[in-house]
Image 1 (cartoon, rainbow, N blue to C red):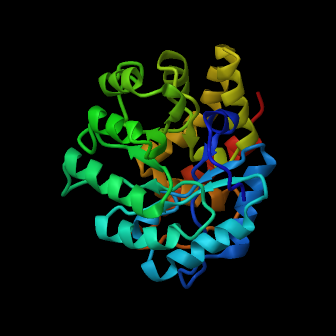
Image 2 (cartoon, rainbow, N blue to C red):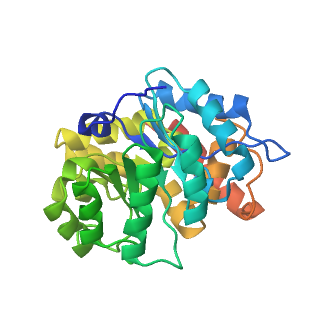
Length: 304
């Protein structure tokens, strides 16, 4: 596992894969199947792994947290950057900081809590967490009322932010007042698009952010890598052609549930046995499974 400090060059070098977490029938971390998925992703020239929502770090047991962090570090390739998550509850993240500060992970993403929060409170909580963990953190902006642009800038100016995952969904990703203000006050080189392959052109070209996270990259990592390189080379016709290949599975994720569909897509494509969902989530219906399998296998076999 890569342990050096993350730079903007790292964010631009690789698509940031956000994989599901494989568990066995007893809901335990399945080391062999998770390693199988990691090797598939690494074989496609994707060397950054972010374990967050798709891995359901929201509901991870405190009793298994340290063990999972240790196993992920062990099974990742030597040149692979792994970013785990903490939170979303304040008390949980502060206890997790005690574990994280003794690991070699160069950063950690804080999962956004939706509900009993204010922007000022989030800024205070993230500051306390970053100080306790002793390393800059990844700020995940998923909801417009979670943290303000000004609060985000404050954390950046204090040197507490490694990078920012921006994932507020817009009907038109090119029309985004929040992101417009964010890139005006925070260096876009530390911001990555956090909503998969579909808004990449608008976010990277129009707003100048520095990379993107994706879930469907877990199915076709080398194709997602080609998308990143095409946008960076301003070959937007090629980029749009690649986006069209990913779109059917992305549409199912958006229409059903992003986490649940990706979890099943990896299994149904034969990449790794992801096992049952960790409660409080559940699987998808048989009819939905047929649609997801068809879309995943089509993506797996697609050519430009």
